[in-house]
Length: 40
Image (cartoon, rainbow, N blue to C red; front, side, top):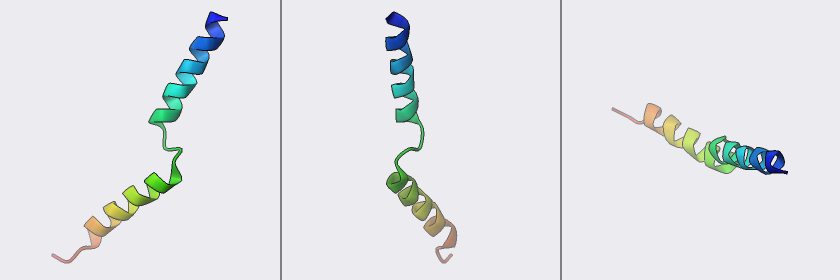
């Protein structure tokens, strides 16, 4: 039982650290794009 709960905790930790939220990823990419293409 302890093994299952530790696996669940690790999966939860991994999900929080990975880019699962597409909306947030799109916003970050847009911001990076705008920084690269803004006039000097």
